[in-house]
Every structure is written in structure tokens, then in C-alpha cells.
Image 1 (cartoon, rainbow, N blue to C red):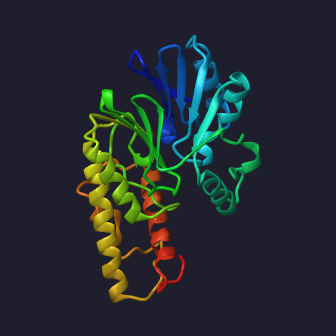
Image 2: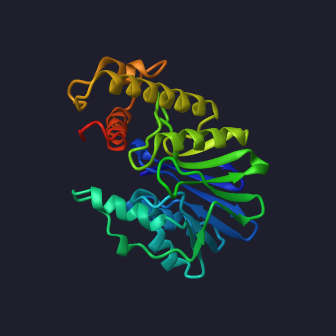
Length: 281
């Protein structure tokens, strides 16, 4: 299920329930652009229904990155609108293939089930005037943002994650990427001076979330470096060192959704993968 928010006459945001992914519909003159398409299933099917009700043809399907929870509706939308084009970053295939290789349960994606993009982009791409796609990396190598300068708006994909409608604390997630690149990505978004951010998951937010994401990453990297300097033991999820507990890396952890606590553990997994001296968790 998702909640529908009409941000203005040109932007409809479909916010996934309970930290599920978001999708955005941009109305541009006599055509539509959809940014991200949920996971395969009911939400993706309902997205097609919502797009059809807009009364204009779909021109572009833009994916901020190729994780399965952001591309699930690509095939359905292409079937409904065969003249539309999917736009993805040039390293999209690496992202979905890596996800397939690491996920072993029923959620395991099948890369062959997703239609190939028609437009492959590099670092920068002008989708149409005033709608700009930029590869920033960090969360994944192919992670892109969509910037609409005239509205001071950035569609962030999973470079930025927020809590749900009730608010609360969120953290950035780099299990598939690199924390240093994610810091750079967040700084690039902040440099655009946006007024509104639409994250890949969670509620629409103001740009001050960038400061809390950056603070978390800097404190985490510092605390992890300190831990590595004093211990050669692998980190146990059941007994985290005190300086690596989430409560000690955030100004406030009140109202943290359980998914973000799990993401923190996976971020530590990733740090250990990137740190040769320590054994994997």
C-alpha cells in the first residue's frame, strides 16, 4: 500500500507504507515521467493504474538505482506505455546482479525479469529542461538523484532515507556501497540548496536531514577507526562495542524504526568488508 501526496499540480508522490519504497509522477506539459516503480506486486500494479488515470502518455521511466524495490513496475509500465523509455545509469546491471547474488530468500530478484533500459546515462543527463539526473553513488555505484531546480526539489533515491509519517530518526545506508562516497553524495545534494527532498523510502523531508545523515557517517567512521586501532576481534551483532552502538552515534535515537537499527548493523557489516584486517561478521 502507499499514500498519495499531491506536492503541487505537477508532482504526485506515492509514499510506500512502513518504510517501503516511494515512486514519483512528474507531469510535464502533455506527458509524464515516473521516477522509481516500487517492488513487483500490488504496489507496482496500482502504480500503473495511477499513471493511467493521469490522462497523459508516459514518456520516461527513471530509476534512481537498480535495486529490485525500485524497478518492480518497470515491465508493467512499459507494457502499458510501449513508447516510453527506461532511463538508468550505465552500471545498473552490476547493482541488480549484486543484489541477486547476496539475497537468498524468497525476495531474491531475477535480473532477467526486468526489461532493459532504452537510455543509458553517465554522470549527468538532462531528461528534459529543468529535470536533471546526476550520478552521485554512495548507496550503490549507480545511485542517481533527480534535481528540479525551478522547484528547489531533489528526488534522492536511497542516498537519503527518512522515517515515516509519524517522524523519528533515520540513518543513511551503505551496505551496497561506500560510506566515503555517500558522504560526498550528501554534500553534493546539500550544495544544490534544495528546499524539499523526496527520499527513496519514508516521508518527504526538509534538507536538514542531510546534516543528521552526515553526522552519523562521520561519527561512525571515527568510532570504527578507533575500534580497529584497539582491537582485532570481529564485531559481534549481539555485543556491539559501546562506541559503535547507534545511541552513541546520533544526537537522538528516540523513535528509531527497527529497520534503521538493522541498517546500522548492516553498515557495520559493510565496514568490515571494506576493512581487510578484520574478519567478516
